[in-house]
Length: 116
Ligand SMILES: [Zn+2]
Image (cartoon, rainbow, N blue to C red; front, side, top):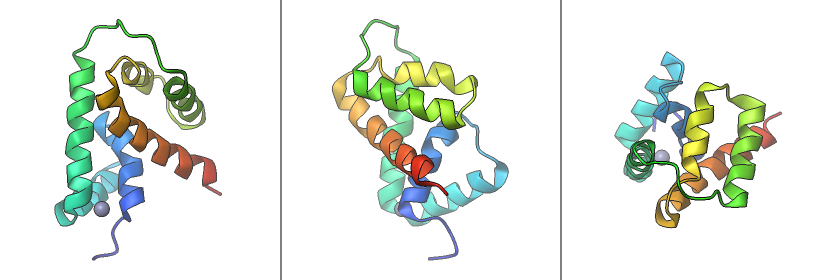
């Protein structure tokens, strides 16, 4: 493997990548990793598919508390208002969709909260 991203670093970029919010360098690193790593590519495809599906869904479902708590926490620390809509979208989805999303969010949360 090249001096690329680790699996968890790649995953941590998913949230921003799906909103096209990555710096060019990060986007390139992520693409490179996805090209080399079938595992993350799978995750990415599931994730981005889930998100685009969510973006087309009307608001109707009540938010599960955990997801909204995590999303709010991350958003406060790191993300601007552009991700607000996306974050809201996250907790309107059915459970089978939110699990992979939540996983990504959890990884991102872990990395953000444990960053020096
Ligand atoms: Zn990987």
